[in-house]
Image 1 (tube, one colour):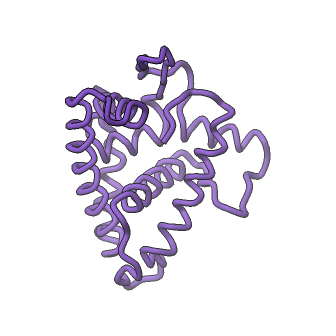
Image 2 (cartoon, rainbow, N blue to C red; image 1 turned 90 degrees about the vertical axis):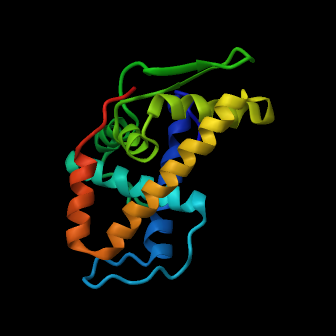
Image 3 (spheres, rainbow, N blue to C red; image 1 turned 120 degrees about the vertical axis):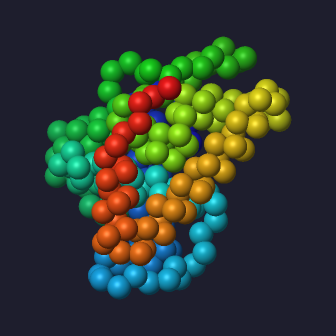
Length: 189
């Protein structure tokens, strides 16, 4: 996942969310039609995280009165596309930044539906941002403390994601509990 704040990179991120939507619906067997179904395919850890993040961002967008983007279903107009983009990725200056040894500065928002989903899954968004940015950009040269934080926070997120997706598959009462938890946005650290 790219944390650079450059508008021209928004389309690939949006496309990534669209692909995750197909993954969530197709692989987990979510039908929204009453009785829960067992997953038809076991998800990899990465796909589990993507599916949970998509579920959370979709709920957030819907809560804001917006239609989550889907493949083959473009926004009704350019203004709607901008509203969805702002709600999803945040607005204004980036609140989280990290300067890499190369001199490149990576930025990420703490507002928006994506940030809300990250806080729900990873807990400490600031710590996750630092760890994932360093690990993804510096690979084995990332500080050992960041590599350890990456493993710890990813394991936490995976447990949260599995719980969230299981609740989604278990039905309406579990969905209500999950929706209530999504509405309780955590404060950025």
